[in-house]
Image 1 (cartoon, rainbow, N blue to C red):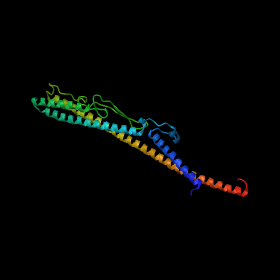
Image 2 (tube, one colour; image 1 turned 135 degrees about the vertical axis):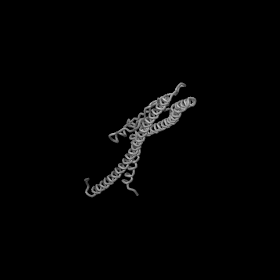
Image 3 (cartoon, one colour; image 1 turned 120 degrees about the horizontal axis):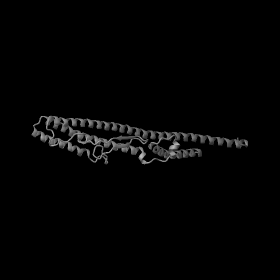
Image 4 (cartoon, rainbow, N blue to C red; image 1 turned 45 degrees about the horizontal axis):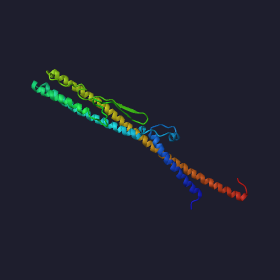
Length: 261
């Protein structure tokens, strides 16, 4: 049959573990908020931050930004495809007779006009980086104030500097060469934009890793605190047992000698 001190020690440990579970849940939330605390007591006493500052929300927004950048890259790839076809069309026009050149001019303009459809798509959640009504994309990368901003740039053929051919255009090889040079410059600009998107995607990947590490650190810290408190509970139990034994020894001395030590 368990002694009174053993029952008390077991009850004490259960009480501490129950408190620790509440402490762990609060600590994980506090650490997930990204706010730096000097002490656990401060962390537990500080009100939990709003959802906008939590790691799960930041991670979700980073995933959305990734989708926007990937979709924008696909848009630019479609524009590139049309420009490359327009480049081939212009190259064919260099040696084409006047009658055939007119048909090539129409195809050239159609290819350029189609790029407007690509860039003016609704985007992801209404976010568009390449269309007529595009806007910069800014996203929190961490809960500690880190931000990433990706500039918008209208990327249809005309906005990139490739001009439609008028009915009187392409009268000479020199006129066609102008269009060819415009396309090459536009393709270079697209490459530059895609490089910026690639850098932004790399930054997002790094930020996601930092946030995941923060979550793991919070969990590990909470787990370590559980272990520390359990260890403290065991020591407290041993202390209680020693006190009981000392008290018992004292009572024995009272009965034997008639006074307390």
